[in-house]
Structures are given as structure tokens and as C-alpha cells.
Image (cartoon, rainbow, N blue to C red; front, side, top):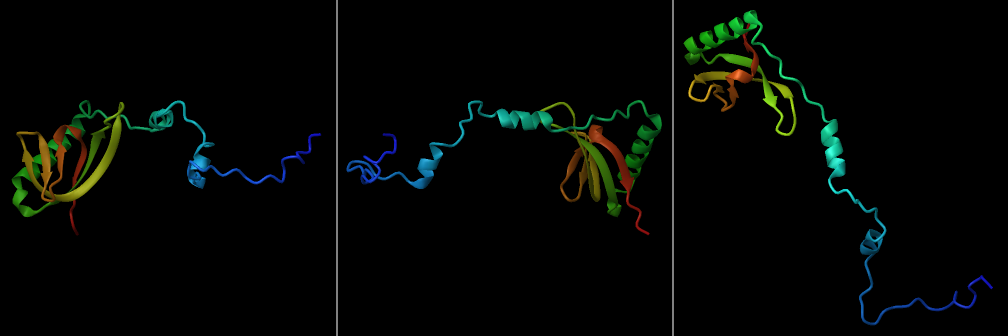
Length: 138
């Protein structure tokens, strides 16, 4: 007979030497096993897109415009000029990076470490600047 009638009404066994397992611990026994630890993170990282750095070294007009704007800012540093800078941030993990835009008050050009400094404490490497605009308030 396969109807389990001989054992169906027996009481549930309770151990005298071990505590009853919590429902969470019991459920964890049946959770999926990740044999490749970190694999999902690697897939996500590979799928994450980055931008290519735009090379302005061949664009004489753009370089001259940046140089002219930086020169103007250095001459008028005491005037609390608000600027907007688009710059490249290299990715720490893979080729490429992303472009960011920051706006603030110009402080100075730090020649020793090649950065443009804002009064708000932000520093941007000069060689990462893609565009630099002076905010002309009307």
C-alpha cells in the first residue's frame, strides 16, 4: 500500500538535544547557490557604458577659445566671476569615462598641479576641460 496510512497520524519528531531551526534558517537551506561569486557584478560592470574622451588638440579654434577664456579669468580673478565648466572624468575601472558640468565662482589657476580652482573648493585638471564658459548675468 502506498497511502502512508501507517505513518500519517504519527506525531512530528521534536529533538531533545537541538533547538528548533528558525523559519529563516530553514528557508536558507533551499535558496539558490551562486557558484560564480561576483559573476553578476562583472556582467553589470561590462554592460556599464562610458564615453570616449574627445580630443580637442586638433581643434585650434576650441583650444584658442579655452586659452583666451582662461587668460581673461586670470586677469579678472578678483571679480567673483561665475563660470560653467564641462570636463572629462576618467573611469577608474575601464576605458573611457564621463563628461560632467560644474558651475561656480572662479578662484584661480593653480600652475603647480595644473588645475582650475573654484571658490567652492572644486578643482578640475586643465587637461580634462572640454569647454569653459563665463556666466554673463544680464
